Image (cartoon, rainbow, N blue to C red; front, side):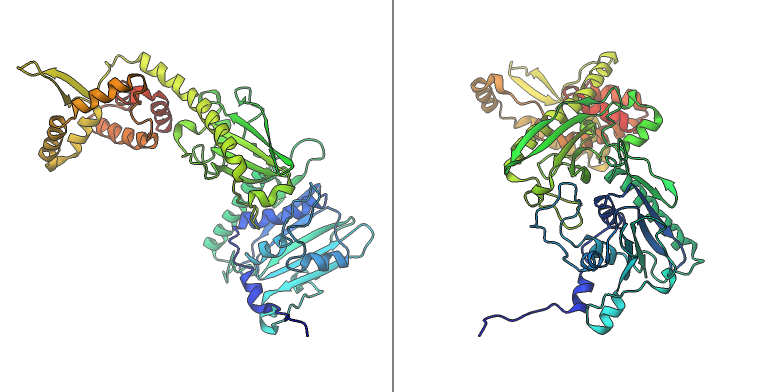
Length: 491
């Protein structure tokens, strides 16, 4: 007797679970476009149609389409294994995207398609029917609202979401707030598609993507056509018999950009958040503006650093690409090289701010302000005291309010207990290895600078004078790029 049982999943339970993959609306629509592009589409129309609870979302393409058998297979959850070898141009992976993306936003999914040699085929999932019947009933008809829908003369595919409970719920058609939210989702989808598929939207054989009839313009995160963009060269890293191409770029400083270029370069998330790695799989952008957990912070003075990483579809498993194709993890064997490349790119990016910051320090008439002052006692002993005129200390004392005497006592305690002998011995042993202040804790500089700046402004200084004083004070004089990036952020 065979030692196994068939344990089929409950249709009603599993199909509801497939809604919980965590898709955003924009990631869900992008997953549909993956199928269109893989099918050779040259024009893709995305439509968000408002009609209250009867609103729908549709994606229509002029790709190769599918015959009835291929459509049936495409509508099956898990229609392909991620272990199967795929065409390098195939943007799919798990055989789940069409279903999970659609179910994440709507309770009804209809696909109408045909090839150049086949008749029109229709299949529809209705989650309410599956739940009521407890069976995987895949309908062969479109809902009444789409009964007369046709594809035109050529082959192609139309995907429609109805019963869009996650997008509109039971909103009335006259609910202007719900309509505004629906339109805002459509706008975010357009921005997302312009970034994710920007490489497909240019050059020979480009794909035209329209949203509610308006052609989307591709968003190039690297501003490669700008003469001031620095391309630091592509490095090819071997991995598992294949390779990964890494291209670091440093974008132009805002002084070299027009207002429109400045706005476009910022992307949807803003300059600071868009820095980092941009991971492409088959020219499709998976991850944008992420340091991939390699230990880097998103700092103002490194925001011009962006790095393109191109991986083939054969390395999906190594990069742990998820079902939504919106997250990945750097493989262990590549982390050291990626960290090295990122460090060099960040250094080049911050050098732009360092140079401008040095110019600012040179132009100021402020004297250098040290944090510690040396003096001699009546007995000739060398002692040290905290410089109360230093901007940081002044800001601290000003902010202490009723606790000013306590802060002053704390400063006196620090001054009286400095281990000068221990410091002297340590310096003698490593005179040429003295660390620069905050070299191991640079992320703390920006909030400290903000604290001092706010204190000086509260005293009546204007922004320029406050920054001039800060730029000439220790430790900020050693980090002109931090001061310059802060100056730019408040401009």
